[in-house]
Length: 310
Image (cartoon, rainbow, N blue to C red; front, side, top):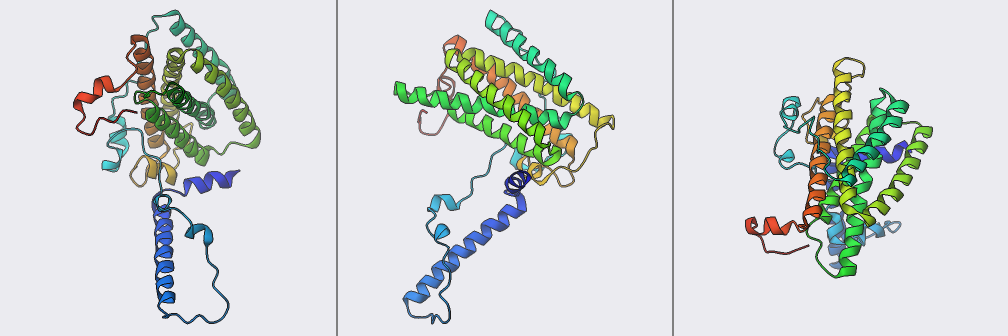
């Protein structure tokens, strides 16, 4: 179980660059060997060399690795340190006041769901974070899937949502990969988390099919709670009750953190992502309520690229 997380985390940074360079070098060498063999320049002696048929048949577009991209613009422009992360204005106490019955129900559901989590995990914030991210990675993927199917069935454009929802789901998955490297939950905790995720996936899928606006509102309030949880996480680190260990390689690469960054820096980066998800999902819910689902209504006039709708 742990080796999978390790393999995924090693797909970043210097190790990934070296691996890609190795693949490219192998491909170039294979091409040169084929050319020499075709012109009679190679005299093969001994046993026939083993050909990596899997790599040789790889389509060109797959030879360019696609790495997860960070959520916020500008992350890759410079190395981020503690002061940079702390200077982000994320609105730690920001709260969207419910103005409809469905919104009030969404708040109640989220608050009720938090109580057993607080009771079970208490101050085990690393394990709490694993639970949080396993659940948080579901809504974006579910929303993208349902909107994709509806776009196909209705034979109409989506309005630009699918890519954003997939990006959100991927971002939450990278949060999970990071916490798995640090927290390393035991088997029974993994089983509990998987059970909770399965139930949440089923319930949220049904909710999104019935009322996408309410579903996004629920996610908005979930993210508000996530920001609160990570703020408490930071306080526990500052108080010395949680060891401020070194940030794993997966975090350094994904958020472009400075060498020597710590767990506290990772929590700051994750909290900033959750704040962005909070604002995005509340906005999506507001757009549905206003009957302005297409993002292109607001973006077309500022876009210099061809107006290709999604």
